[in-house]
Image (cartoon, rainbow, N blue to C red; front, side, top):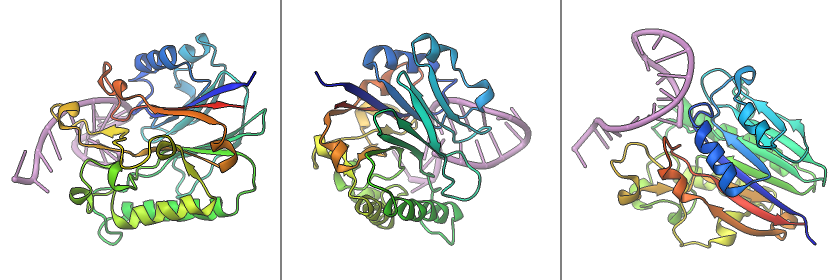
Length: 265
DNA sequence: ATGGTGGGATTCCCA
C-alpha cells in the first residue's frame, strides 16, 4: 500500500487573526504538512497550541514583526534546511525543510511588488524582479533531489490565471515582464506547475480575490497567485491537486485560498 | 469610475 502525503499551502494574512479558519481547514482537509505565508507574527508568540493539539508537532517558524513571515507546520517529521534571503534585506520570505523520505519543501512568499510596474518609479517592483532573478540562480544550480516549491508567488502567469488578461496587462502580478521571469524560473529546473498539470489552461483556476470587491464571488475577479511546483519525479507521484475555493467565504477569510496536493509514494 | 477592505502596530504602511 502506498504512503499518502497531503501537502497544502496558504497565504493566511495573519495566522493569529485567522486561527479559527486554519483549524477548520485542518479538520476538513487533513493535510500532513501546511506551508503558510504572511503569518505576520514573531516566532515567540506564534499560536502554536492549536496545531500541537491537533497533532502537528513540528513547527518550523520564520517570522518577523508586522509583515511577511512564513512557516511549515507538519505532523510528520520535518527538518529545517535553509532560509534564503533572496532580497538581501532581512525580510522573512522563505523557509525550506527536508522530510525523512528525502523530499525537500521550499516555502516562499514572493514580494507583491507595489502598484506601479516600473522599477524606476517604484523600487518595490524592482525588488520583486531581483528576488525572482535570485530564485532563478538558486533553482538553476539545484541538485536533483525531489523538491516541492510552493507558496504565494504573487504572479498569475497565464491568460486564464486572471479574470481579464487585457485589463490586467499593466497590473502588477500579470505584467509581461513578471510572466516572462516566472517562465524562466519554471524552465530553470524543469518545474511542473501542478495547478495546470491537473487543471489545464484555459480552465478557470484562481487562488486570490481582493477584499475590496463588494461580492467577491459575484464579481469573480480572481487571480492565480499561489502555486505548487515540483520536480518531474514528484509530479509523477501527485494524484490530485485542488484549490479550496469555499475557504474564501469562511468567517473572517484570508484574501487567498488554500491549495492542496495529495501524493502517493 | 482610480474607489474599495483588511491586519498590524500606531497615524500610516503594506497587501
